[in-house]
Image (cartoon, rainbow, N blue to C red; front, top):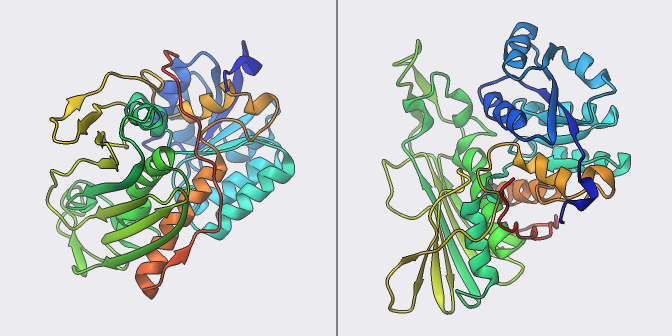
Length: 369
């Protein structure tokens, strides 16, 4: 995956969904010379034009963007329940798609998206791409170099008080399709698959002991919201390798001192930085030894949201085999099925087999692009 197949190649990109996160993608599109933002579309045309202006692009309707023959790839930043409809429309228009997390609102929708892309022979990519940064990739380099021995287990922990304390409209986070696992889980599960390989089965438990939440900011401050989805989820992921990861995703705590991810092997343990960020310190502890910081050993230096699309380009996905590149739709679907499986296991009390198959993405060598 040297990117030689795409040397000198510039990809023309259209962005659908001019919400808050669009500014982070536009910053990357403006900075990475191989990505060329042509147009921004949104249901609100005025907002599309305002956001497009920040990237030197055109603000257009969704239909206009999809009909534009110059647009080769669409970054889909719509809300999760619109991911499938928007992605399928772009695929039908013959365009590659890179979709924000989660891959789709349901596993069935994700399967339809991936099947359509494969049938059309177009690229289907998926966030999160934070795993391509120096944080997770330095940890990956340590695992691959055998510095922890044989990987045996991992623990991933995210504990926060809940988004209602700062978000003025947090309703979605406490409705089916929301919750801490589907909201933040993609960062953690994608990292665990990157470090330890694909998952074959899961078990889980979940609770929602608070039936209401109070909005803490904005014009609706003080309004109480009903909670209709689990707000604390614990899962065990059994990897194909035999390693077992424990996942704790919660909107029910005040704080945690647990590392975002720890990976334990037969010879050493790794403390892995926050997978919601691209960089961060990786620490290693050998038996009876103190924790030591590791030098950066892999990943795109200075990476930001949108590097997953750039990696697909550099790997040759847009000029040959659309399955090339690391932030593949197959990985996004696998992560989605793992999360859905944990929720199903929590509801039924039974182990759930994971039927999708995603290859462990190849490591990213240290790269200054």
